[in-house]
Amino acid sequence: MNYIDRMQKIAVLGAAGKMGSGITALTLIECTDLSLLPENKDKTFVLYAIDLSEESLNNLLSYLKTQLIKSAEKKINWLRETLKFNQNLIENTDFINKYIEQALTILRLSSRIESAYNANVIFEAVIENPSLKIDLFKNINTNNKNNPWFLTNTSSIPIKYLNDNANLDGKIIGYHFYNPPVVQKLLEIIPTENTLPELKEFAHTLAKKLKKTIVEANDVAGFIGNGHFMRDIIYAINECEKLSQKFSLPESIFIINKITQEYLIRPMGIFQLIDYVGLDVCTYILKVMNEHLNDNTLKAPLLEKFLEKGIKGGQNPDGTQKNGIFKYEKGKIIGIFDLTSNNYIDIESIKEKCEKEIGPIPSKIKPWKQIISLQNKEQLLEEYFNELKNLNTFGAKLALNYLKNSKEIGKYLVKTGVAKNEDDVNTVLITGFYHAYGPINNFIE
Image 1 (tube, rainbow, N blue to C red):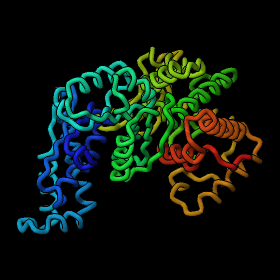
Image 2: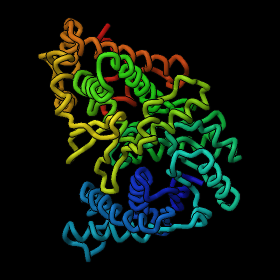
Image 3: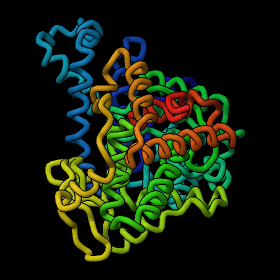
Image 4: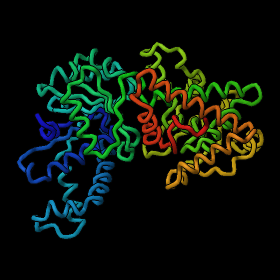
């Protein structure tokens, strides 16, 4: 069964979720494109979008239509050429509407797992729960007579563990999209020693069709992305604990978040990023990594304390940020949760004190958004970090120590066989986390 044959029957589990909706959109667009090619005119393409919530599936349909319109607009010239023999299509809107119409003939919304029994390829994007994933894989593999392949979006669970416990005999591969899948270019592909060679080839072919930047990680819990991110979180929390002798917890969080965003030139500070991902998600990933790596340092008690107070973070259905460690108003941080008083305190009430302690910001610093768009980025970064090294301020010392630790994490991932090389680590952090530079660099040596 070749690539096109496999793509004729697709199922996405958790299709209406945060990650599943994007994966559904990408695969639906690819199936629609394939279906419009003259050589495939006699083939039937079907995509089963499966989710337990029928309400969420209705919302998914609206989201998919939006993504289909965007996709059609970007390739309007291709559409006009491909459908040029249809004399009923004249204006661009006619071609776009025809594209959407074609896609909707492929799409099947379903709240029943049985829909996956007919698929050739199963994309799995349910919650990060090993038992649930294994049960789903077993169920489908037992009842599906098409010898299906499984592509799991897990961000932390070893693929071999899923393969062995679901008895998949190498018919599974890690396919870790980054959020949101329709925007993020990075795709971590994680094969095991037993992954079928033809499945691995299919996974790479599809990723190229989706125009993703591919990094193949080794099958170690957390892989490259969370292998760095989770250890970055732990370091940040440890730094807050060190600061607690002089500062309150909200003040310590403010300081570390500011350092990691502004001084390290990242799109978000570390605690804002935790909010974005979700404290519950981060805690669960750490738990999975701890269990599979037998590493008791992979714990974040501070996050658990916030969770005990009902502080989770994450996003609302419309993509806006929920309150977490920080309180948000129109995307702007306006407060920090105080575990002592069980209330959010106004960010302005601590800002002046914290910034005074941090010290003056380096003169050569530029905002992250400006840096990433510059042609001479490397030169500017080198000049900035040279200035940072010569500053004797509290903030500069914190930033330099953080950078050194980030580099150590990156090198550790290579040394322990999580990443194949240093370039892969840097690619994941630059492409998947939008960092302006990779953690393994010579800026601070």
